[in-house]
View 1 (cartoon, rainbow, N blue to C red):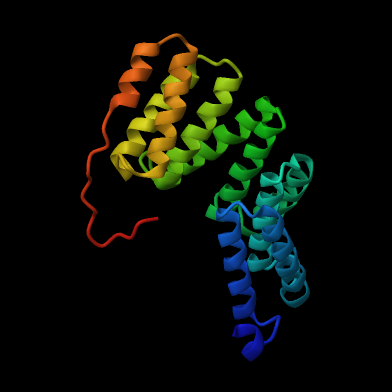
View 2 (cartoon, rainbow, N blue to C red; view 1 turned 90 degrees about the vertical axis):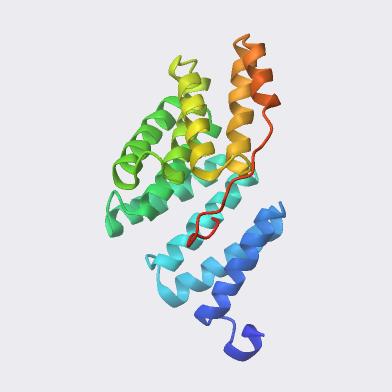
Length: 220
């Protein structure tokens, strides 16, 4: 409807196309997602310019889709470009800049560049803790992401960081939240790898408890 009423390049039409691409990504339809993202990015560059916030968000989203398709080198190049622009325009500690830093660090991890991924993840975690606080979901996710890289580096801090991230996530988001479940699984795998099978079994045996929704807050 928006295409017919507003035209192909109206901001609202492009916003809808971006939303559809996000839904395709969530469904795992990465090839179609990429095609749509590339079209939106091309139009936004032409209409808004290279460094408009909406253009940079499209670039970031497309880079994440390219990563999901397994083209890590191309994803790295794209993410480095977005990060450099966001640092210059928004500053080092803007939420969008930190999003780009975290995303690039994840791609570096996938490329096996664990030392550089570690350096970037430690920086993002330190900034998010300072700006958002220890218990903010984004700080907790950064903690878990850093722990995954430390685990690949065989760093003894990895297990305790995984454990800390899991307990904080459970307190902040509840036992049933997908992020909590993901962190529990990561911790269980790490415990099993270290021969601590009983602890891993105890973690898997925990039954989710119902948590009360906080009034006035929407689920993320």
